[in-house]
Image (cartoon, rainbow, N blue to C red; front, side):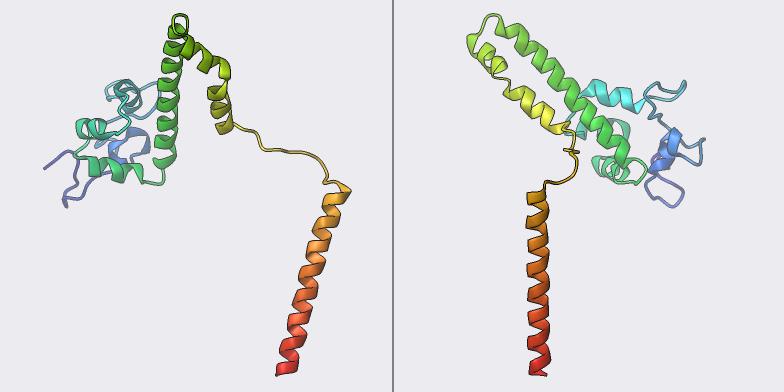
Length: 166
């Protein structure tokens, strides 16, 4: 019997992850950032492997890539893996940016790119805070009121037309 399957031959998912498992004896891995003694830490392995395809990671730690996909779709694990993916992307971007900054000292093209700040704008777009301004202006209120009034008039006209045709 495979360590990744139950007695009926079905693939195990959350049971394999210590923090999410009901059966701690069957758990193979820890997913906490700090790790748990005696269990391989999937978070650390994921970050170290830097495998954006997740294929090598999946085949190393699970029965197959399909098995890994099934685990990723689980309600409890989906937000966790989403966070890991985002962190891995930022980790690699930060390292590459540091490399670009070092290269900018000798390459004017790279320096111009960095000075253009387009890379900053793109990074900040993801972390944009919603515009939480105050009350709408009188002009905006008038426009919205006009739209509502026009819609109500159109509904009334449609109602009268339907009523007359009946």
